[in-house]
Length: 116
Image (cartoon, rainbow, N blue to C red; front, top):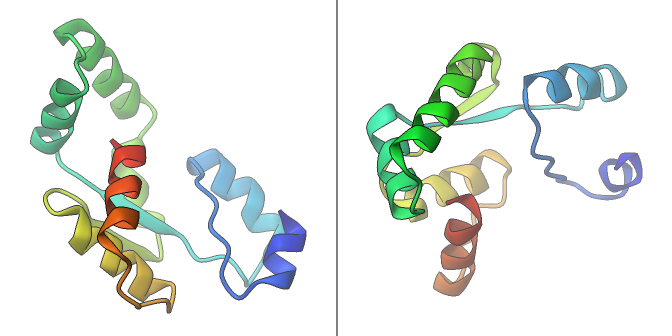
């Protein structure tokens, strides 16, 4: 990971709050955080489309709430509202990273499938 950061202009790591705290010590001054914010309605809709039942959805939402995952935006450097169009969220993320070149539709579709 440190080699990727050293050798590339942009490196992406998906982390939770604890991971950000740990990595920030290693990458002091070189770490920027992006929070992909969503709302409960969008989360429930996505979980329904994934086929989760009510008990599983309740578990996921309670876990996220109890671990303050919905509050991480307060300490993030950038916030992207990810509630509707994946193309918009993706383009905003690319712009934050200074990579604002439009990606082919199949790349965006593949990312969307990974996120959901």
